[in-house]
Image (cartoon, rainbow, N blue to C red):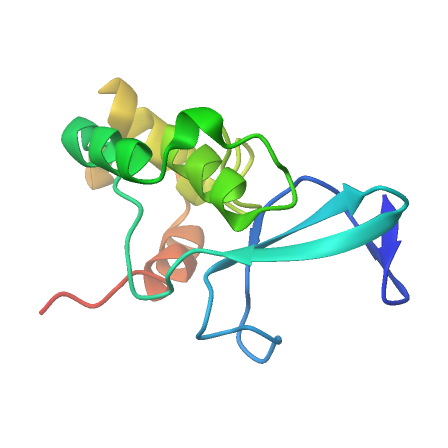
Amino acid sequence: MATYQGKSVTLNSPSRISKGEPGHGRKKFKVYVKDGDKVKKVMFGDPNMEIRKDNAAARKSFRARHKCDTATDKTSARYWSCRMWWGDIMPHGSGKNSLVGNIHRRQQAGTSRSKKNSTISKKAYAEMKRGWKKKK
């Protein structure tokens, strides 16, 4: 834990920029990093674009276009954006203990259950469903 503008923050852990927070609508994610003896807030990601890291061709194209192999500076948006596209980190709230994170992992592994055989309570499922994008 570190302190940024008087509040305690977790370092090197990307999270979504929530509504009402500075940068909402301009960038999708934020991460706090240590820059020397200071803590810096790095914002990155287009809020209108989807990260398609499960699409191998899109991932390869993005990583080539942004030269992700040379992105080593943790204080740059390019570094964190490349890490998100590589798939080795997930934003806070979609990690291993979240409901959506668990469902996503099961889908990728091919072991997901049908809604009928789900072990998720109806209340939890309804709560999760409220956050899904509306189908057109």
